Structures are given as structure tokens and as C-alpha cells.
Image (cartoon, each protein chain N blue to C red):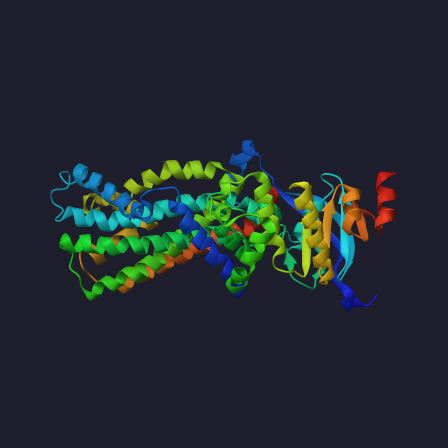
Length: 244
Length: 254
């Protein structure tokens, strides 16, 4: 395969958590060592991971709780540095900020649009242009967007979060079990928007525990099991392998 | 830590704006609290201590110059202690260097500090402070004091990720440090044999420099400037080293 076609390439990636080595009980020990002792105990989460994602495809990652899916996504978006191996990402990654995790409760909807977008490093002219789109997509009125986010229902929050995340045509778009929220109509709208994003040539990485969800948009994917890649293939093969 | 890139500036700017907005959200008096808080403090100290130090001429002016700096230091450090912990949700979902969160809090505290300085300059004139060119010395002091505060706050904020005791410890100790620093009293009343302990407290040097400039109307001496710069850089170095050492554990421990 031509190398320019690969938008994400991981080779022999090893990733660990660093858990604090001294429990509360041994705080004294930590102080007495005056920082000479290693502050962390390493716990490996991803093992020797190889992954190739092509430009413009919609790639699914399937795995159970604790299989390392979120960690992998954090590595791909640059939040966690791998211990060893090579990681090449040839594009901008739109972060997992969807779903309103980045929303600041005390600020209004409008203020949050500005805040979340700038945390995604979107310049302010671009944010101004996107506001109408976000209002329309999220189905929130001007009045609601002027309200503090803490007064929103959880559905309103995820609508706003999703609308902000999809407003900027990213090159690589990460969706982390995002679509399990919102009502049926909004969910349909999300799938429609994701298909638009795919049609525009962007790459999508979709993470889920449910093969049926993946099937709706992905053609290819992999199964992650206890930090190892256990299978890579087409979505039908994946469904079969995962359920068997 | 690397240089701050342009797209990092977007992030930093919006974090500062957020911190400034959040500070007075849901309060009626808003920005005026940054004036009221030190005024109330100063009034208390004036009432309680002015009779205790009858030898100090124009005690109110002396207290004002000290308390403004102290309030900046104590509020900034206590906010910065929780900065990384309270930004866990952002740190886990977007790539933003962890030291940005204390930095944005510090910057919003500096903005606030400078804004609150303006009306206090008028009060100080009323109290008989000499307004002279030497007052520009206040700016290098503010810059160096901010760097000092940042290093210290970065250290507290990083440690607090692993041991939440840090914020408790700091909350209990900062009043003690207040009394160990010549904010509300003059250093002359300290017995000579204890003086070296006072000199070991870095805050003493910043507060003394402030008093020299505002209260005594003097210029900052080279010697003072060198000491303050050294203290600021040492604090920054310690803060950054501790941050560097602990940084990779942030995401797994938040």
C-alpha cells in the first residue's frame, strides 16, 4: 500500500499508565526519599500495538470495558505519550471533546461554544462563522444558548457538545461511544452528519462496545482485547469474530 | 516545556478569559470584590494593629502596600493548587499541556491584581503616599513576584494531583506564613537573633521591596532586584522540575 494513503500509522506501540507508587500510607516514605525514589509504578495498558488507518476511511475499534480503547484514542490525539514504538499521525485530530465533557457548567451556551472551540485550537474568526451552524444543529434556541449550561438537560448538553465537535470539518474525527445519547431523532441526525463528514473525505475513528453500532458507518475495524490487537478486518468479519 | 506556539496562545487566552469570567459569576458585586476583599482586610488590620504599632508612621499606608501583594499571593496559590485537578476532564480529552491551567489562573490573577491596583493608588495618595517616578519600580516587582508565585503554585498544583493533602496543608500553613512575613508589622520589631529566619522566607524580600517603593518612596536597589530575580527563577525552576517529573502520571491518576 502507498504510504501517503495512511493517515495514522502505529508500529509496536507500548503504552503504560503511571500509577502513584506510594499509597497514602507510605506518604512518609515518599517524603523521606526526597524524590529520589521513582514516583510511579508502571502498568502497561497497550502491548505491541500495530495499526494502519487509511485516509478517508471510517475505522471501527471494538472492545470491552477496560480493553484499552480510550487509552488508544488518547494516544492518537497526543494526550498520552507512548513508552516505545512509532506513531505517525498525518493530520489534525479532532479531540474527544464531544459529548460536552469540556462544557463549563457556570458559563452560557454561547460562552461554551467559544471556550470548547478554542480548546480545540480553532481561531476566533472560524468560531464566529460556525455559531449559526452550531445553533441550528444542536436545535437549541438563542434563549437557551444564552442560559448557563448547568440549567441544561443532559440531552441538551450532549447536543451542544456534539454540534461543537462536528462544526469544524476536522481531518481525523474521533467518536467515542458518543451516539448512545440524545433522542432517536437527534441520533439519526448525528449519523447523517457523520456520513457527510465521511463524504467530505475526512477520516473517522469510531469506538464502541457494540458491533451493530460500528456496522452503521464503518467498513473496516479491529478488535482490542486486554491491550492487544486480537483481530483486524472487514466489519462483517469483526462482528462474527467478536460474537463467537 | 518548549516554546508556546500560536495555537497554544488561542488555548491560553480562552482559559484566562474563562477564569476571569468564572471568578465573579453568580456574585452581585463581581469585580468589586477584588477591591472589597483587601479593603475589608486592611480595615481589620488597621483597627486591630494600629495601636499596637504606634511608632509606625502612617500605618494604613504601610498595611495597604503589604496586603495587596499578600492577597494576590495567597489567592493565586490557593487557586493554582487545585488547577490541574479541577481541569481533569479537559486534560483527559484534549491535548493541552498541564502547566497551562495554573498559568491561566495566574494570568487572570495578575490582571485582577493590576486592575485593583488602580483605585488603590488613589487611596494611597489620599493617605499621603508620594507619587513619584520611583513608583514604576512596582512593575518589575509585580513581574518577578508573579514568576515566583507561578513556580510555587505549579509545584503545589502538580503535587496536589497525587496527594490532595497538599491543598489542605497549604490552607492551614498560609496564615502562618502571613504572620512570618512583614505584611502588617515592620521588620524592625523582630529581635536581631531571629532575623535570619525572616531572611530565609522569600516572601519577606518581596514585601520589603514593596514597602521600600510604596511606603518609603525609594527606588529599588540593584541588590534587591538581583535577590528578587534569583528568588523568582529558583522558584520557577523548582516548580518546573517537579511538574516535569510528575507530568506523565497526570492522566492516569486524575
